[in-house]
Figure 1 (cartoon, rainbow, N blue to C red):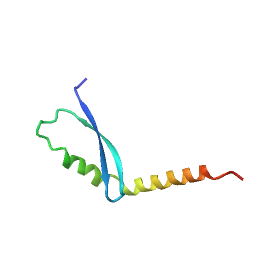
Figure 2 (cartoon, helix red, strand yellow; figure 1 turned 90 degrees about the vertical axis):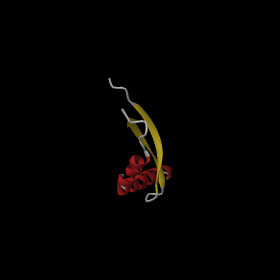
Figure 3 (cartoon, rainbow, N blue to C red; figure 1 turned 60 degrees about the vertical axis):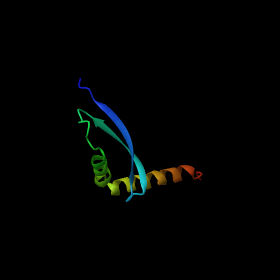
Figure 4 (cartoon, one colour; figure 1 turned 180 degrees about the horizontal axis):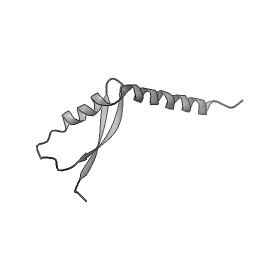
Length: 70
């Protein structure tokens, strides 16, 4: 198996106004590799609409769980 290392980065999306975590696998990366443009690509290319919809559904599910049953 190849020698790979991974790191978890916490990124901020100004469109969604939230932080999210991204797991990045680093395999045979040169020592002078600049990771910031790579991470910026994650923020720019993640699906803002799907993220916001998932957060809305999660909030709705939590709200309905808190309501007493009739």
